[in-house]
Image (cartoon, rainbow, N blue to C red; front, side):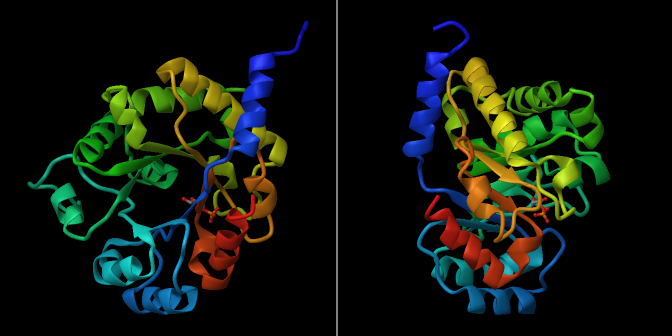
Length: 262
Ligand code: 13P
């Protein structure tokens, strides 16, 4: 079978047809006051699948019981690796634990680029979050320049290797990866289906090589109610991390419903 990788084909068929339920995650970024968040939840109603929201801290603290009531999982958009101390403007794991969070977001490209979040700091954060009993969703992504220069594979595998370097094999079970090409975030133009499939396929293979296992892999970058069906249908997409469309309850609800059928 020259030129055909049978293992790869079997793997693709199995991942396509035996897909686990998708994860639909909303990153509210610096949006949603408590009042707006409350109205959002009223309109969204309850959920019966894997739905996760990362609100800003104040909204997270006050709306945690409401989210719990509706079956929504939730967590912070960032956290520190120390439990307490002189770190003005930061938030710690014990503070997050009080709110009943289940998953922590780490390494979003906006934090990496605007707040200089380094892979060194991220490796400590990820280890701290997981050893404190949380799941961690690690965001990775390449710039447009890196995509065009053919540097994206190197960039993405480096981020995974560096940010997860402190973890033992068993601890990897608590990690989810969100692939968010920086050039597709907030632009209204997602990566093409070919790019998503190629990148996710590459990342799953890289994880198997690096760790001997595959971690759940979400796609983020201009996901909306119109493209969710197609993107979710790609074989290596285990869920979505959504910015803009997660702020509108009707759109977010549509994506949740779509996620159940792909
Ligand atoms: P958009 O869905 O607005 O492109 O944002 C994606 C994102 O950054 C989610 O973390």
